[in-house]
Length: 398
Image (cartoon, rainbow, N blue to C red; front, top):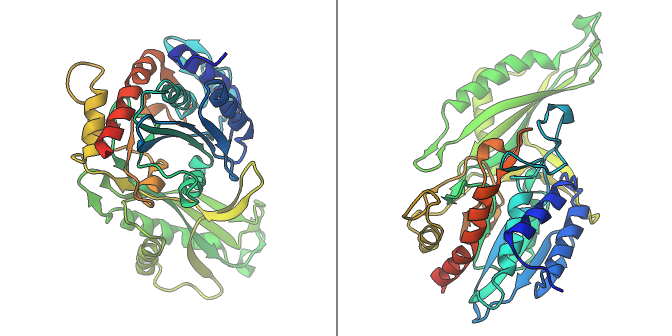
C-alpha cells in the first residue's frame, strides 16, 4: 500500500534522514532513502541525475506552470559529539523539538516538502517537482548542475531553508577569496636565511579591514561584508619559517558581483597597504577552489562561490505566496524579508532567472550549531501551509 503523505510520517522520515550522516560528496545513503520515500508515496516519476540530485514529480491536473520544491541533502560536520545537548545523529524528540544535525538545516524541511508535494496528487493545477540537491554547503554544485543541464525546467522555485514561517526573497552571495603570500622557507634557528611569508600578514589584515569598511550597501539586503577567517601555513612544522601563508577571506557579496570585480577590489586595497612586495617574496589573489567529487563519482575543480539574488517584494509570485501562507500568530499576509545566509536560490534565480522564494519552519540562529533543532509545532503549521502556497504560486504564474 502507498504511504500516507502526513505530518507524522514526514516527521518519522526526517528522523530517518538525520540518523544518516551526509557531508558534501557523501550524500548517497540519504539519496537512496529519499528515493525510497518518493516511491512509497507513489510519485509519478522518481529518479536521480548523474551528479546525484534526487528528483520526483507529482503530475498536475491542468497543465499549469510547474513549481519546484527544493532542499539540499548535505549537512555540515557535527564537531565534538560531547558538546551537543542531544547526540547529533540520534534524531531525538524532546522539549517540543526535533534535535540533531540537519534537523533544521535542512532534513526536517526536506521531509516536509517531500510529503507536502505528495499530498497534492490530483489537486495541483501544474506539476509539483521536488528536487533535493547535493553540495549546497560547498557552493551549490547540485542546483547549478540540475538547472544548467535542464534536468527540470520549473517556472518557480520554493526553497526550504529556515524562514521561521516568513516568505524570503533573496540573500547576499558568498565568495571565498585567498590571498597567497610567498617567501623562502628556512630553519627557525636561522631566520636570516629565510624570507618569512608571515611578514606580509599585518599589511594584508589592514588592507582587508579598510576594504570591509568601504563595501556597497543594498537597501534590502544590507551591506556586503568580508572578514578574514583563517591563515593556512606551509610547511606546517613549527620549527620552520614558512614559505607560504594563505589568508582566507569569507565575503558576503551583493547580487551582480563577479569573480573579476571582487579580485580587483582586493588587489587595489592591498596595493595601498603593501605598495611594494619585498624582493624574494610574492603575493597572489585568487578565488578559492577545491576538487569536488560527487557520490556518483563525477568530479570537478570548482570555486567556492554562491551567487546572491533578490526578488522584489511586490512581485506577483511573492505577493501570492505571502497571502497564501499568512501569519502563524494571527491574520494578514506573511512577513516578507531576505535571508541572512546564502542558499541554492542564488543559482535558481540569480543565475538562471527562475523566480525563487523561501518558506519553511526553523530559526536561522540554530544553523550550523551544536544546538540545532526544529520546533515540532511550527513544523506542523508550516506543513499545513504548503499545499495552499504551492497552488497559489502556480496560479500567480498562469
